[in-house]
Structures are given as structure tokens and as C-alpha cells.
Length: 277
Image 1 (cartoon, one colour):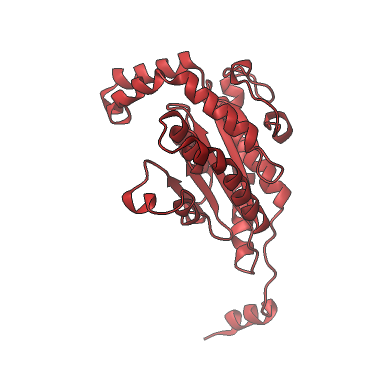
Image 2 (cartoon, helix red, strand yellow):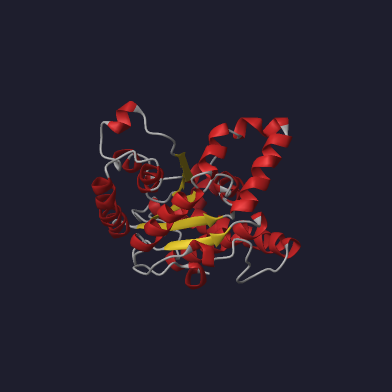
């Protein structure tokens, strides 16, 4: 999946050429997809535990999953259905909304650095530093020249993460315009979901072309060897969850974390327990 969904850096990206309902590999229907995810759960949990355990012996490696996408694309759903496979003690989940006054007083990467996973952890960002080249670009929240400089800053930042043992997995959840409308209507039709809806969501739909362009630029300029972008079709929730679960599994298997060897005499410790009074 890493090769199939990876966005080639430095090349123009046309999001309209990608089918948001596509199932380019793997299960072909929801039942098969859910079954495939269930089969991955034990392996994902084992690899997470190994990563966490390895950190106790000085292994600094960790994983950072970055989720970006338009409203209703499934960032929260991914956290619930994919990250739910893991032991929460080894996860660090952070959602990024509009910056606070304190955050605005610093570089746009300041709040990101403070939320990074520790060694052995799997970090999950629901939105991220990319908001500063997405909504900031569309809403003109910063000078155009400053936004243009941020792409390079992001690339250097992500390379520094990779150099420090962070495996960065960036997923763009690609949802279609029509599917977003259906999901927004579902929220309006269900009183229990009204808290997830804002009239601003409708206003943002008027800016859909500008947001798509902003994403295309970010995908083109910030898909690097150290931190490539993966474009995940997100109209089908089950496929989105399967694809991201598979991407995480592939990255964790590449890391191949190992349980640390005991730094004490196991036989002696066992004998002490057996002979204690």
C-alpha cells in the first residue's frame, strides 16, 4: 500500500483525477474489509507493544500518524476505528484547532513540537502543521510570501524528525464534494450529531476549489523521501480504515521492533520466587 498510495513528490497533483470511492487494492467490499481489519488487530497490537518495550532499553524510534482532510473525511473516525487497535497507554493523540493567543506568539511549528510522541509511542495528529499552509492559504491568514516559505520549513522539520527516529506517516483522506454533503446532512438529521456540525462547514464548501488547490500544492511540495504523503480514498469508511491500518502495519513491520533482552539473571530471579517463604 505504501507504493500504491504514495504521492510522488515534486510532481503536479490533480485531486480531481483521483476517485474518492476507489478501492485500488485489498478487499472489494465492506464485509471483506472489516474481516481483513480484524485479522490485522493482533499483529498491530503486538508490534505496538514491542515498540513501547524497546523504548525502555533506549530505542528512540516512534511513529507519527498525521491525518489531514476536508471536514467529514474521517479524521476522527480513523482515530476511533484504527487507533482503537492499540493500547492507549502507548499512544499520544492530539487535535489541532485554531491556534491560541500563546501559540500565535510563536512560530507555527512551536505547538507541533510540544505535541510530538515520545520514544516508543505512536502519535496521532488530527490536523497538524499543514493547517498553516491550507486554511491559512485559503483564508489569507498570513502573507502569501510567508506561506510560500512554510513548505520548506515543513520539509526541514519533518526531515529532522526522521533523523531523530520518528517514522512520519502522512495520510490525506480524499473525500468527494457530494459525499461530504451526504455526511453533513446525516449530521443535521441526527440530533445526537448536531454537536459535530457548524454552519461554517457550509461556508467552507463554497471554498472547495480553493481548498483542493491548497491541498494539491501541499501534497506536491511536501511529499518527500523522509515523509511522503499517502492519498487515501475516503468516501468508503471501511476502505479508509483498512488502508490506514495497512499503512501502519507496513511501517511497523519495517521498523521490526524487538523486545529488549533481560538485564538480570532470569534463572536466579525465578529460583528466588520459588524458594521464598
